[in-house]
Length: 360
Ligand SMILES: Nc1ncnc2c1ncn2[C@@H]1O[C@H](COP(=O)(O)OP(=O)(O)OP(=O)(O)O)[C@@H](O)[C@H]1O
Ligand SMILES: O=P(O)(O)OC[C@H]1O[C@](O)(CO)[C@@H](O)[C@@H]1O
Ligand SMILES: [Mg+2]
Image (tube, rainbow, N blue to C red; front, side, top):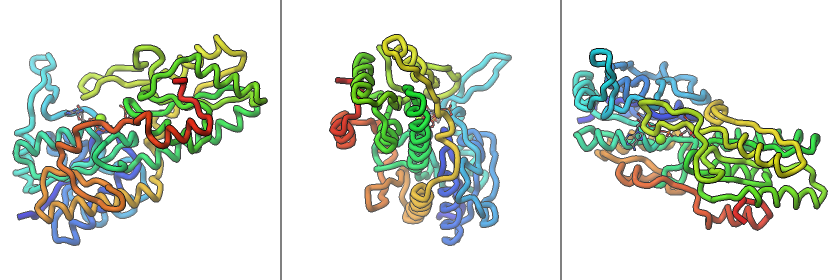
């Protein structure tokens, strides 16, 4: 019997989370269920940070960025940090979560998250939790779904930034580098680069040589174009290694990237006689009001997650397989990251119009 469901958001935030929370709440209430919001991801389940969600609680949140429930990319319940005699130790708190859910009378959970949060959901499901996942991330790197919500808004932000950089690049005859997010997958760089008319796109999946980037810029100069636009994913490599900005203890994937744009600028200025400037778009990509596409996708995902629970589905994630919303197992959902295939049609189209990926 399903009477009360919980909903939580995990991992990095992204536009559209509130659209999902609203759709889960509204559709569950209409089906006669009670809804409990869990604050700050899985940490809130451990610390019993629960609050009821009713219509008033989700009123007006559709266009709002972020998540009204709060989120975190720490607090892995299977490796939860605690202080024992002043010393940090990691303990498994998964049973505490199951106990806390039972005490609160929460029969099932909707987990809105990326690969990390959905992996935790999968492991909790293996221990008996009734759960449905919803795929979120601006990185669009979950392979079981055509698209994650949040990506479209981030793509708009990055494209708008490229449009703005174009005019100043052209006026000053400069090379402008835009560094965007994307640790292991270059979707934001690839799609914004094509949409924003970049001359060079550098992504983690395609190894590049600085000489090829120089060649492209010089080729443009010879055509009378004394400016160039480069979009680089934070996870693109100049040489062997990722450019790491900081390491965050207690995070599942502890490295935080940043700095490839400046490294690239330094290398270019040594080789060409054009001024170079770098813009790091950073968390602007995660903020702001979701686009209509993300609001719609988030609403579809939220409603589908509740429907799946009502139909007795368990241990699954809702996914877009255009034009349908389907369910796939959490094991499949968390199996492989969706990275850009260098043979992808969009890469080929970009190359066909002269965009360089620095590989030739
Ligand atoms: N492969 C994994 N298996 C189990 N837990 C993981 C894994 N990767 C990350 N985690 C944990 O999951 C939580 C959220 O991970 P992360 O910060 O990567 O967010 P996410 O849900 O993957 O979203 P995104 O990566 O898009 O921000 C963290 O507590 C992290 O320690
Ligand atoms: O919020 P944080 O810890 O700075 O994490 C940044 C990372 O999270 C993401 O925004 C989403 O996975 C990545 O693109 C980026 O590398
Ligand atoms: Mg992750």
